Image (cartoon, rainbow, N blue to C red; front, side, top):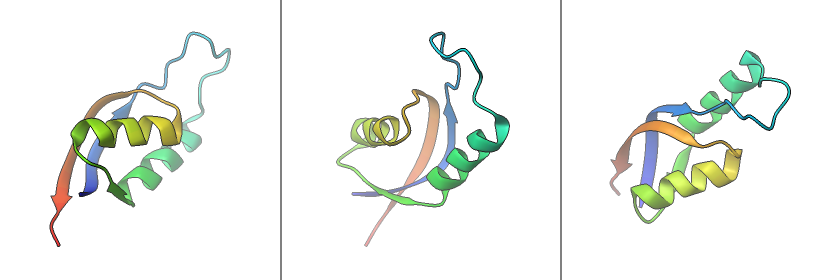
Length: 68
């Protein structure tokens, strides 16, 4: 299945990181996620794909399924 993420919120807080991720980098991540069509089996797989790709947990996500 193909998914287009319409809204997403990552958890950019990480107790192990001494420095917070700067806002410019956060914006770049959001732009990449929202500007890409993602292949996944279902919603859980989509979340796993995004978490693996960017290394940050997801707080909330909205998406639409792209029908062929």
